[in-house]
Length: 432
Image (tube, rainbow, N blue to C red):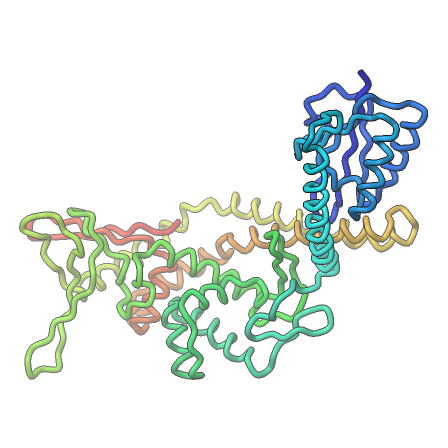
């Protein structure tokens, strides 16, 4: 029994199918990419060397329209070739009473699928041109000629939002700031989408998850974007609603005895302006419960411990290994960029056609964007010098609570309170 197989795939929409996944012993495989030249060759060969069976994945691979599919089906039927569509459970040799009805149903489905394919092909061509996806431009931008352009009236709102978040590391605080300064009300969810939206970084993201860098003018720099990502990762480790808490130790202190996070409690005396701050466990299961501790005492000991232990913790980081990772990523970006720069000459000499060159350029740009994203997640190279600068007690004492909160969370993962009878001591766990 002689069996042929035929596949069609559009390189703009899908990867090239693996010819070894049919599960049949095949005599010949015809494969088209973008154009159906092999299909025509198959039909011509069938007139002289007709197979017993032809395998395809689905009927819509036989043409771009229902008319083309129907014409191909009729030609194969006239040659007496059994057609099997493995993904649609269609077999032309099964002369059942419902075969014609099933075929009409499949042709209607083909029409719908081809309409969807044409829409997706249009979107794919836009991606190759690095054009924005369909839909309204994000707040702060407007649509220009084939790309986003900055909206001068709304982009200052976005810029101030990012600057406030970078200064204080609080998403809710940045949202409240917009209401106070611009009367611009947004939800916390919208604010988080703004912080992670590649458009504000000068990149374009598509529905398939791929990102192309440097497609339009950014509102924030790459360095600011990397800092935003670090702050978001840092805040995700904290208990809910503590990222915007006014006190610098909020969300960091844990009671080692009962493993409960400790919240800041404010106590005032009647007719007195003075207030007392305490840290007490939120969900202590013990009886009697672990007692509250003075916030100021824990703050002072935290500053002393950071100044003493942070430089030693930074020394333990393997900086040569970190540098090697950064160098590998940077070299990978350079190699891809060199290949990208060679495409125009390959196109001019005829080595590549226009569509292949455009598709290859798109793949290279998405790979470069992926490598740049990995590079941005690595810690800054000046960590050792920063550790020396913040190991001076006066540095911490000169900061406001909001500023101190920002720096504590840059270095500290958790502060554990270890109780010993009526005494206690603290242990700091750094993020590296």
